[in-house]
Length: 152
Image (cartoon, rainbow, N blue to C red; front, side, top):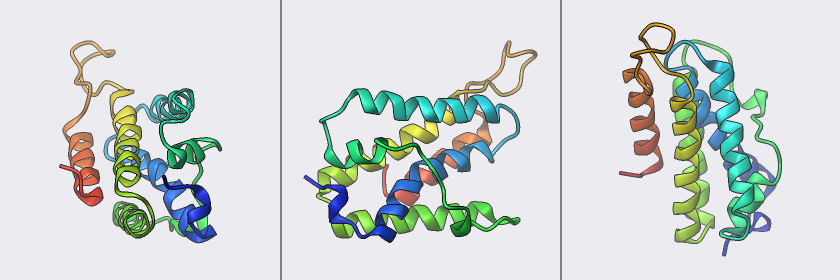
């Protein structure tokens, strides 16, 4: 089993920020619902804490509040590319350090955070009636996140 101690500080920071970045990628894909989407991402962490013991790596990841180092992500027009690069970096660190089953569980967790953000706010319709659970832009972001992480 993979533990937090298997990573150096920089690598752990990269691994720890990827779920939040994936959620941010979805939140920025379309307008509206940022507060609900952020709360939904936090709820995924809370639910993962309840499943304590299934993976030491995920236990360590969800033990502290999710955060992103603002110095690692520059504000600008190409935040999407920066997030994709950070997700690729996290994947590289995991594949070099973690056991394959832990890396797979981690990737599924990252996607679950992004999916929670996507499903938190209905898109279109009138006052939430007739809207879509996931907008086409959010679905495209989810598909790109899965591809970046190497998930089908």
